[in-house]
Image (cartoon, rainbow, N blue to C red):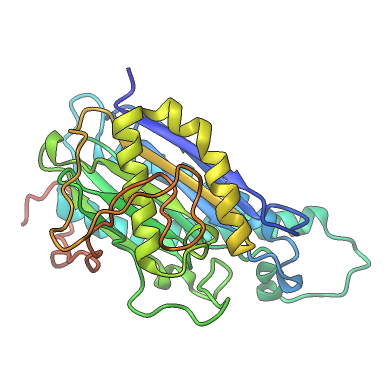
Length: 328
């Protein structure tokens, strides 16, 4: 039986000719099959005419890199696993660089194979710009929970005690529709990383979700989005994943009507955790409708307000060069 129940849904934005989002979820969260989830949002404007391909490449390549990371975190057989310090350094530095490099190679290869010889000569950066996309992805193994984000969108985590956080939220919100992107020069330097070793199975998060900004923009405030995610956790605990899967398309369709954008959500819910979240004392409960949100006051799954999110996690200093920690 899977350790996690997963949800995946994407809805095309109103008046959009194509859904620029792409998403994937796979794995069971075991050492052999790490749980991997990712969403990407192609920019979609004329300057990014191939961004629907850029988002697909981003997710596919993230899954490949995440599998390699999972294999490093939980080697098979008698091989000794690397230290957590070494893994953290790999997650913060090697992983983003390898992912961005692979994405650039992929889009340039696609351009070379599919462009017309009659098209005017473009610089390498201009070609890459055509495929611009954001990316949010996560990997969960029995040993570590790591996530990466470039550009807008959200990583949402509900801890085992019911606390809702968005650990990769930027210190300052992007202005208008501007966002960081895989097509940005040296984009690996702009990737934000979440690092959370799993010290015991009971300390694993209860819910992990990655979503594009079409969902969060459908609410009038950040609080409304947090209410939605807390309500999603509440409904999963009370009614199970099958029930939520059945209504999720309607929730996202309603959200997309308000944001006007493609709206995508991938989530994994831990089956073995207690059902009832602990709400902040000052948060007054309010009943919300079963349908998707109208605005911030209406959290689609139906739940009391959640606590305010915390800031990004802190990390330890750079690790030793020995991956097995012998010189720590």
